Image (cartoon, rainbow, N blue to C red; front, top):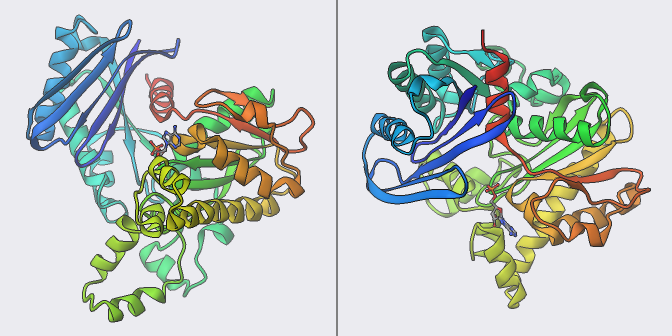
Length: 397
Ligand code: AMP
């Protein structure tokens, strides 16, 4: 049966259609620059067929109508009723949603109500749920939360060492992010290691333009690098990751910034690889500049590795026993052998032995450690959409 997985942002809408339980991808597409006169509509389907068209798409509802119309025109489906369910990625489920959930009007309201925790996402995601409910009234809709994988964290790991009242009164705590990706690679890793999911101990490294690292003990997340928001943790493309909060008022004073939101925007959008290198937020551009001798780009590369190594080292210590494996995923994790080598070499004294030949690979699910490495190293391409589709299928009546 056909299941659509939807990943909505404020200016983009990504979707995939899977045939389940076969897990076969039937079509996928994205609308970029949504809300403009020059939106980009892309679809891939069938045997390498593709459409790439620039056209005005000025509203979110129009975007969904267009996707559904094209699905019929392109004969991806004969009738829209063939799409039995729609799974939505939701960035924040707060403390309310500890697992994927069937969508009802009340659930949509609750998701919208959590917008303070994910201002750029939850509101828009709730809006799309209403649009899909209207346009595909017979399809079951399911919400799959980025945060639910972290509902297993203990207070000792999710609380900040500040007045407990801030948690009690305002739910200030670590929520984490990228949970769907970490959960997907955990399940794949368990298969590859011939273990049950509830028996695996892993450190999963989702390294893309956003980056997060998760410690998994016995198939459950016990800690993760992102925090109250996705700004915390390791250094990222444009996000700083962890910094001493005291630099915020200090920089504001020096730069005469009067608005905290502007300062947070600097940490979210002008920091990380971009801020340190001064070149780009894209790792490939930073690598190219470093190759040509750009010292700031070289420093950005080193700091990126350094922050990852520190998190992995602390999580190896936090796990109750030796990790079975480190898992690399997402844009950089899947495609950057040098970064993987730099991280693993720094951790070699802790039992991580990378096989340099096997490591010279991109985007393929495989072991890249030596045969007798005490801690294995796995490369597993992420697939959040498949995970969303699988959860949606599981929840169908
Ligand atoms: P994502 O957010 O998962 O799409 O990842 C985006 C990041 O992956 C960017 O920093 C890209 O530069 C990086 N990336 C994608 N492909 C490659 C590649 N072939 N080599 C190095 N980095 C890559």
